[in-house]
Image 1 (spheres, rainbow, N blue to C red):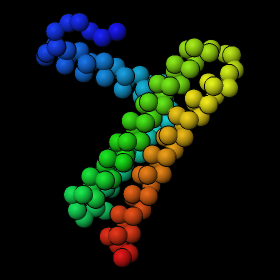
Image 2: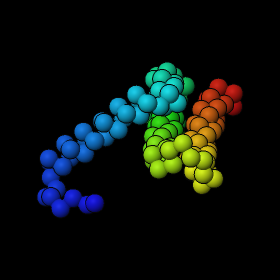
Image 3: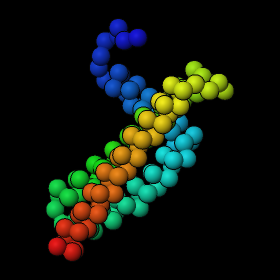
Image 4: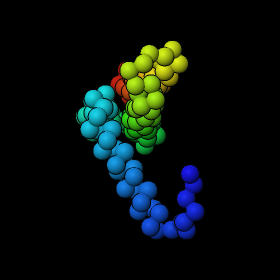
Length: 125
């Protein structure tokens, strides 16, 4: 339900706290997110070394952040499906989880292609 309270600085602080809670929960409960986050920490400095332009750097960082964002959305979908379905199997629940996983995979491929193309463009072309 939408808040009827006045918007302002308090709302910004509250939203930041909710976001921090979401990041903490994702990091605590989702092994895939932790792995992708650690890879981000390793590949972020690497991006500064392999990119020759600010555009290449932006493309690398943005594609890595996109993977993390979509992983958070996928984890949210899975949590809601698990809450609603519990231990019961349902075709639509499986489809929702598989589609969320596919979205993460597509973003990972986007990052991989971006990384490979930047390396190719800078070192092999």
